[in-house]
Image (cartoon, rainbow, N blue to C red; front, top):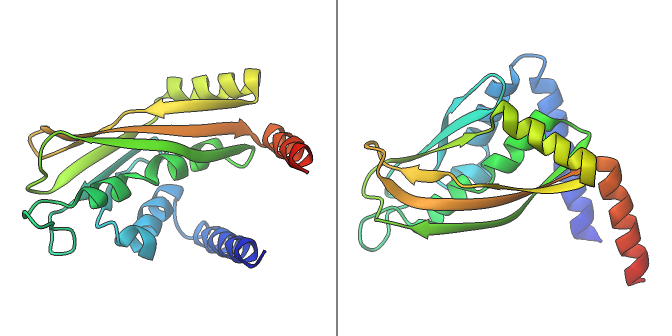
Length: 186
């Protein structure tokens, strides 16, 4: 029970900080600097370099550094994976708003070649993506979205391919589903 209480406390803390920041900064600025200053994200060695005002486009860079250099002198695969992991979920939570539940459901990475220099990844949601998500959730209550961005170097050479599955649900549908699941396991 204590872990659950601590999670709620951190969630409330981030919500409060965000509400205060919204008085002074745009959503894009909060998103970019929130990630870049977050101790959790900083450890990944990734940095958000571009965030569109509507939050539908995010570009990150992962520089080769002493913090992420592996035994053979390239970027550690775990750094590549962790720097890309949270972006879509938080991006979509901000785009869709409070009437939706968004969770990372699964992720895979397929390494194509060593990252010997700074690499980049773009996270994009088009207008059609957002309409499709809302339509599917409206019809079915929930939806699993699959996105497949690449990690590339400055010449656009693919270093790794990602596959991210993001679960999206109507908040009310999700609450009812959780209640049914709790009752059936009792």
